[in-house]
Length: 128
Length: 422
Image (cartoon, rainbow over the protein chains, first blue to last red):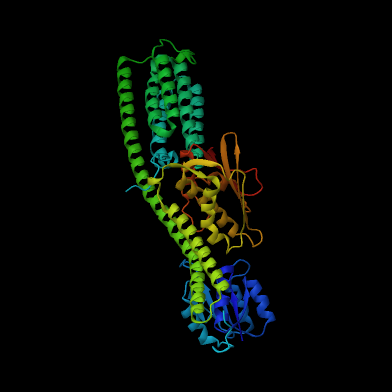
């Protein structure tokens, strides 16, 4: 099963991808909402989406709406935002988790484990 | 508390309080007196003169209603002086019209704002000259109606003198008091509003900055996790090196943002004139808008011809102006469809002046809006988003630098130009 990580900040995206690969997940990535929609449409193995909210070229809200229009429940959708402005209304409907950056890698993994299981066990996990 | 307020109150604000209350009231009294006192002789001529007089007032009112306060007052003064001079010339010393020049002179001194002193002095001098010229005459310059030339008795003249004196006294007292009170009220309100404006600007900036910092902060936590996980098993020196590189870059990114924020949250109390690279000045403002520019997909291009030139200025204030103008552009292009959002920042040197322009893909079409852009409390943004003070404060700041800020309406889209002495 694959986790789709959608984040426009390249450095953070790389670090997130590396984190989940270290923990044995299969990961695919997108730099914008629209790119994520294309990947999601093409790849049926995606079991979890973790997306940023503010992104150029299609934000997290648009991505969520698209995914929920295909299936109102699956896959789970985690919104990971750096938004602090209380006047910005974030989407709630259809969302599995709303997480705020920065969140510790341990907490993030624990939350993700509620929705997905790693493909590889600790034993056959690739070394960094 | 020092809140960085320019203590010179803009004349247009004072006018709102004063103008309609006193100036026209007094003008009307004078006008009525002239009409009553001259009804019997030179009737048609007086009627014509009063017509001109009234038309002048109406025109002044119209200008006032269109918020062209200075033009309104100048009209009032010019009409008042000119018609009074014609009346004096035609009626001669008998009616003692020349005493009105004393009242107009006093009015001229009090109705203009200290920053418009050149007008008040010019009119006061003109009134004094006209008074001296007409008071010494024994015959009218131009006798319009010799047949009905009315003779005043001694008692009439005394009564006239007394009424003029009272009029002058009341006008001086009233105007001075009203003007002083208006200045105090307006200064106080402005001080409060500027502080509110500054705080709300800092508030929204803080949100931006937090948003900008959260992302690298999270990436740092992930890199540290990567390094930690390497501690348990066989370490990969190349991967560790990459992680450390990333950590350094990320912490630098946060440092830049925090420095910019610190810079912009100062008030001007501790902002002495100092030298700064033009490029640095612009970059600071651009770094702080990055949090809004990127998510909106705005194409932001910077082209500084003289990026390495040093400029002497109050760095904080000037950065705030650039940030202000940039923020306006971001707000403007955010309304446009994606793909049409762009902002271009350019600079150059022309005849001892450094210019910096911010052009965006927005368009301001309404002539009414164009005229009011720099007015305090004027905003095209939705309620709660704009205070309507940004450009007004920016203009005061730039004028303090001996420069100017204006919209270049010859450009096809919105272009703001800031010009400061190089």
